[in-house]
Length: 533
Image (tube, rainbow, N blue to C red; front, side, top):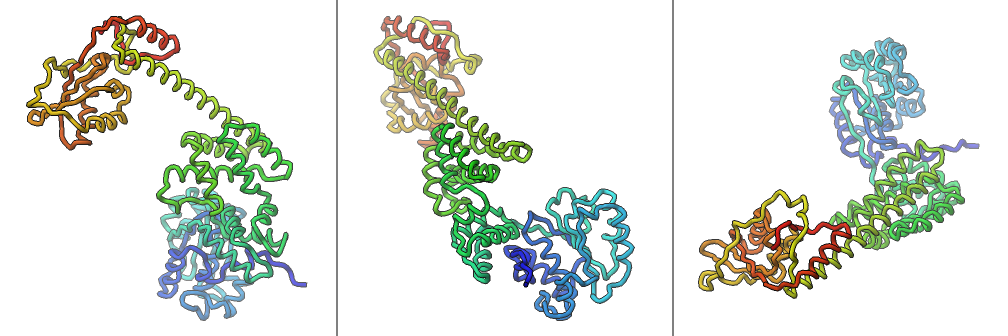
């Protein structure tokens, strides 16, 4: 009976042409072999399952192959076959995690002085080299810098930051990229077509995204799914891997958007009873929230989305319902939850606390903002109505700190009425006010009902303002901002002057009462002073 071989081992690339999504590396290595200009030490770095160790093995076979084919090993000669079987003594593969001491490196140095037995080069492949101790690295330095002409070193690591700079400077470094989901899905389809099972496009795409850029992880997941059924679909993937379906993910996201913690907790309970992986589910939530964030902030670049086509419409709906602040807060909380889950004894509890916290904070924040906005709007409406009727207060309260230290722009005021011959009405004044409102809404509100005249010869923009609070609030910096807004609309630079058309109504009590109510509500009255208008 034949021994079953795992798919990731059976379908491990045998030549540089078989390596997926690393052309910047495979092309360079093949050219070096073709031109006989190979280096004495290489360092391959990148995330797991991207082809580092596989490339090192192919390189070791190619430089020693008796009949190389365009920089690739022929796979037919005795050296290639023995190297693939692991019986070629001139290719030594070492695990850096298990052989990380000074004594192991000293043994390596002693053996490296001997000529290769059958091959042209003696190749040392050290995997996970970052696990070696500082003493081991120091013992290896001289050998890496000036090895015998027949010795080559190939290092592989997933944590390049742990490798000393003295080692990095002595090696040619190659960075392996994460493999794109589309490339992984295509490879899975090919493997399935060569095996006795089939896989749907949606299932291949799902596995590709779960594997997070690692081909080995993807093939292992495919192997796991093939043990369930010969016709693999997306349901098979979710069942075999123990992940929740997209319906559960979107149901929780809908609950977050509705601030409904109870609904979110019920879904988590159902998934827990089905033995779903809570950590993986939290990661799925964060991935979909990232897609929502991208939809809201980068709608012109859909290629950066990492979502299945069938999920796009639901993501767009969520993006319309959830403000960006809510999305960012939820995403940050769930990513922190994923980090805590690696150290927590109860992953379910961590996720439940996070969902409660998200829904609770959102409800409180939205409720506070909504209530405050409604109170401000009601007070502004009443105040505007009274001012429109000509009612003015006898006195106002203290000026807020944000404007207390800035003197009103009294030097900008003019008393004479504009001369119709030299000042012409500004027809685009409403547009200028709209632009000014974007940068200074508090002051622009006081310009409601105002008109503007321009003296083109002197470059003056004269405002006729009917709101008496304007005199108390308008400052030089406000004038500069208004001038900039006018320049953006008209393309002309103006000096700002204004004239207040004051009313003589004596009905002060209503406004005074309104201001007192505003203070009692905890609101500051913008621009108020002790002196009467």
